[in-house]
Length: 405
Image (cartoon, rainbow, N blue to C red; front, side):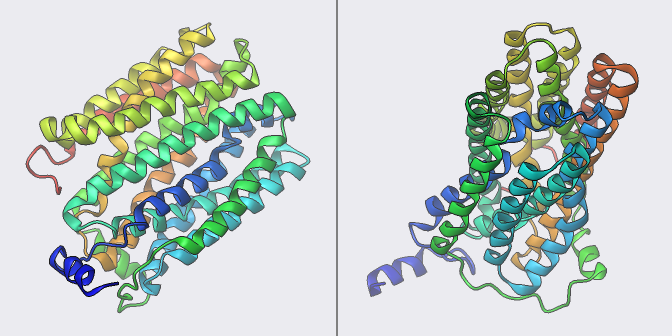
C-alpha cells in the first residue's frame, strides 16, 4: 500500500476501526452466497423426500428440526470460542466441511431416521453463520452495524432464493438425490474461496469461554428481546416454508420444479423487503413498528394456507410471508450486537442465533405432531397463532429514536 493510500485509510478511520481493502466486502459476499447455496440447494425437496422415503409427518418434523437442534446446542460455544481465538475464518471452514459431509450422508441415508443425523450435521454447518455475520460486521464501523446486517442478510436471502429454485429444477430433471450432490460440489467451491477472505487480526478475549462470560453480554436488553422475537419468528418459518408448506404443496398437486419456485417466490420478496425496510421503512417507523407489521404480514400469509387449493395462490401467500421475514430479520440481527464491543460480538451473536434455533427446532417438531394428529389445517392455524403472538411480543423492542444505528 502506498503512503497516500495508507494516509487515506488513517483519515477515514472511525475510532479504532479502519476500512478493509476494497475487495473484502464483495469477496466475502460471494463466499457467503456459496455457503447458503450449499446449505439450501436441497431444502425444497428435503421434507417431501423424507415423506417419500416412508416418514410420517412427525418423523419428517424430526428431520427438519434436527437442523435447529444442532444450532441450539452449538452456536453459543462457537461464539465463545471464536471470541476467545480472535479468529472467524476457521469456523467458516468448519461450516463448509460439515455441509459437504451432510450432503453425502443424505445421499446414502437408507431411512428417514438416518436423515435425522444428516440434518443434524447440516445444522452444525449452519453454526458458522455466527462467524460469518461477525466477520462481515468488522468491515463496517459500529455505527453501521444494522446496515452491515442488511447487506449480508440480503445476500443470504438472495442466495437461498436462487438455491431453492435451482434445487427444485435439478430434482425435477435428475431425481431426488441430484440436489444433494450439487450442494456438495458448491461446498467444495466455498472451501476454496476462503483463501481470498480478508480477516484483520482482532483482539483475543482475555478470558476463557465460560458461562460467566456469556452472562456478561446479557446485560444488554436489546440482545434478549431481539433473540426472543427471532426465536418465535423462526418457529413459524421452519414450520411453514422450510417445513410443511412443500409437503402441503405436493398434496395439492405441485411438481418438484414447482416446489423450487414456491421457495424462490418467498425468498425473492424477502430480498426486496430487506432493501426497502433498511432504506425507507425503519428510518421512518423505527424498529418496533416495522417488526410488528412484518410479523402481522407473516400471520396473514400463514393463516390462509389451509384454505388454499391452488399452487398459484400458494405462491401469493408466500409473497406476503416472505415480505415479513425479509423486513424483520436484519433489524433483529442489528439490535442483537449493535451496542456490544467487538470482543463480545461473536458471543452475543452466538446467543442470538442459538436462541432463535429454539424456534427452528420447536417449529417442525410441534407442527409435525399437530399435523400427524389433526392434519394440515390445524398445523397451519396453530402456527399462525404463534406468528401473531410474535407480533405482539415485538412491541417490547426499542421504539424509534432508541435504536442503535
